Length: 414
Image 1 (cartoon, helix red, strand yellow):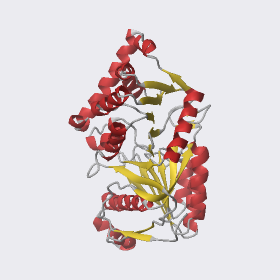
Image 2 (image 1 turned 135 degrees about the vertical axis):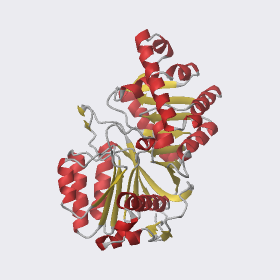
Image 3 (image 1 turned 90 degrees about the vertical axis):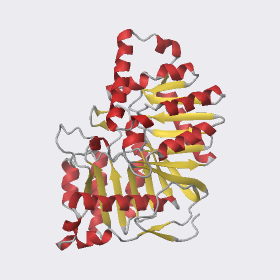
Image 4 (image 1 turned 60 degrees about the vertical axis):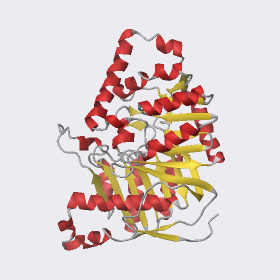
């Protein structure tokens, strides 16, 4: 339980390095059926500020509900700010756009898209994290976009909800999420508008925000040890990958990873293989339905190495898998980062790492249920007998993603 309000004031230059602390309440939220009611309830009760970052903000039932609640909060005087990615959401759509534009909700775009034929490396550096902070006291972190579970922008209506997770957090790490979001907001004010524009007319309040401190409620709310792990292209380029690697190298019983886009580098694969060879049960729940062909083929090109090492691979086929989670003994992570070069080398991502046996058990139970309900095991003998044309496609996907890593300029570190 909380020991009463306790405020922390951060400056824009304070470090966001991941630090594990106790004193958290961390609630696991599976899919939109659990995530959206929790987020909506928090927005309805907000009395000071709501910050939201999302890769996709879709004009569907879920997106419209969130847009209406954000507009209502702004109407009652709450400071509401939304950041969308310029590739994931090139422009706010339909009714969502109408609702927000008619309100005092403030919106910024991370790296607005230029021309269709812009092939610069910067275009690959996306804002992929999904974060919300309410009143500086409650944070939501995970892989769930503002997108209905039963709709896919590329494939239309879905018969079954996509599999995804987020967490709702109270406690000290909320201050890190709050600072990270305020810092990005200030960065976008400068990049998108320029300092001179901020110094003129009605933008003076925005200009003051560039140096204003960030005050968060960091009262203890439970006994769970947790930390926020951010990935960016400056100080924390390998932060999420390092947390995975430390947990895998230290695993003694079990590694259970569910990841939508799985194309790990050589070091990551060697760590998984080494864990399996020392007797750790290693299971991977991966995408079984083809969402993006090249990514799907590239992942399957890695199966042979992993299966021969004794690693179990299960493909989720009930619906699309969008989860980015793992359970490694009593260590668990939930977040936005895939295990592929675009997340681990290029995008801004956010994961929560939890070191708590009870939380790990809850996430493990959800994943085992997903494996039972919609998973199809991939045996080595079946994978090895793939027709030659199919194997050729897998290697086309593999080479295409390797080329993407080379174009990014980060191939030496992957």
